[in-house]
Amino acid sequence: MGNVFGRKSRPSRVTEQDKAVLQLKQQRDKLKQYQKKITLQVEKERLLAKQLLNNGKKEKALLLLKKKRFQDQLLDKTENQISNLERMVQDIEFMQIEMKVMEGLKVGNDCLKSMHEIMSIEDVERILDETQDAVDYQRQIDEMLAGSFTQEDEDAVLAELEAITQGDDVALPEVPTEPLPEIPQAAKAESEWREANEPEREMVAA
View (cartoon, rainbow, N blue to C red):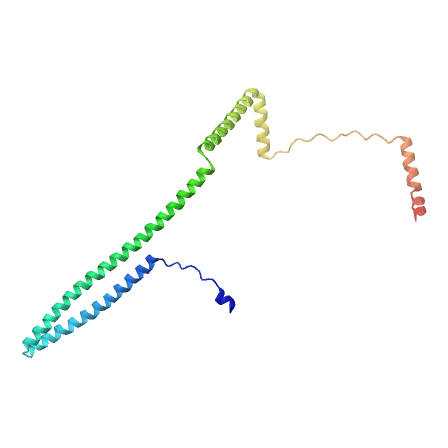
């Protein structure tokens, strides 16, 4: 329970413009309801006036028609008020969109300013100069290599490239076919003596 009552309320996202738009729409809806009600009433009074004329009650029919005329004027005023409210709602909503666009532009401008502060024009020019120097240096190396190679070197490089491309085996050094040199007699006798005495050493160690 303590957590429920102690929880901080989040700030409302409803702005004053939103409240104003809501109130305008509510007023517009009430006027439309009133307009519908008056329209039905005018239609009934017109039918009643016609019935009074048929019954010979011209004075009462004329009175109803005057009342109907007044209600028709009310309907016109109501229609104008509804149009004004709808126009005002559209203006406010469009202004909200413009405000959001301006906020986005402001954020973008601030971001650009920050980027300009991080990297100045001098830094950009220095990087471009260094890049151009590297390109020039590589070009000089290429020209030097191209000038020092003979046609024979070029053909050898192209042949090696062709062999690698086609997957040819690389030539390996040949394995010697001559027999290995024999071990000297003294070294051979010492090796045989060590092999013969190895079991005795293991027994003494045990």
